[in-house]
Length: 107
Image: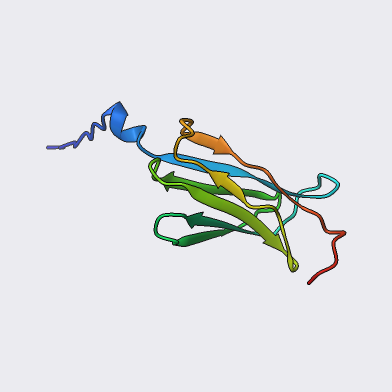
């Protein structure tokens, strides 16, 4: 006898999460491998991090849509500008590409 459990998730429950992804690029538009990307929850100040893959890509999933987030990339002592992912943005899947100018001298 085989029993199967089917889990049904209401569409509203699925839509309650969002994600952000993108690529980290240098000043010439080339992907930066092994850059660090920080995602900061602006309510709790919790920070999640991701190291970009060979294509410079990063991805954060299961984000609370009721919270603002701050996204920034760092590489070799240099940083991208800080980007804000606002809770009022209704898109569940957001692309945020980040640029780091590698011509800027390291601090």
